[in-house]
Image 1 (tube, rainbow, N blue to C red):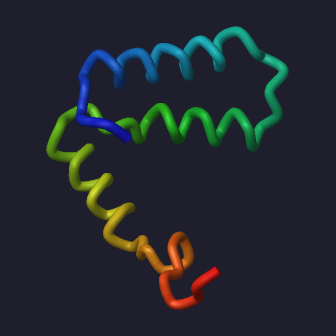
Image 2: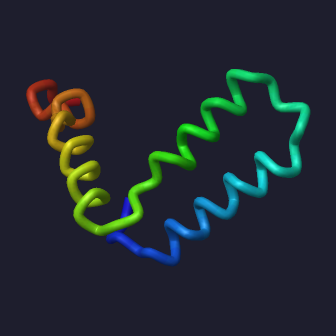
Image 3: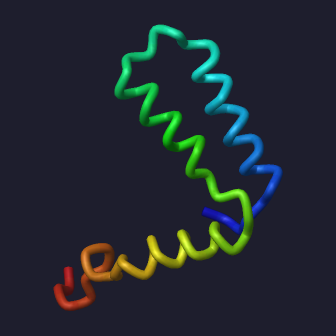
Length: 71
């Protein structure tokens, strides 16, 4: 996740819309998942930054790097 970009979000929305429009055979659950992703794209910087902070604030370095066990 990088800095907010209106152009990038528009590209993402266009890609999802294209996927939905060109794949009428998608099963119900898959279609619903992509429609939900499309509806929930952050279309402003405030919402985007809130979501990034919310996601990353729940992560900890524990599990990624363990300095307590020397090799």
